[in-house]
Image (cartoon, rainbow, N blue to C red):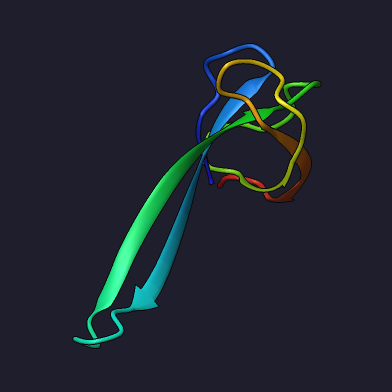
Length: 73
């Protein structure tokens, strides 16, 4: 999910995952931010997007936008 579109040609995408703790069986939530290259500035905050790993484009950007799965409401 895109959480920030304030930069030019760059989006911040938040990925959340859930998994069960191996010993205690509690469901744990983890989240990670990715800086994604968006050449045409087509995605906006709240959109669900698909990203792919690419060569380093800047100090933080190592991902590229493939397509928008679902637009924000």
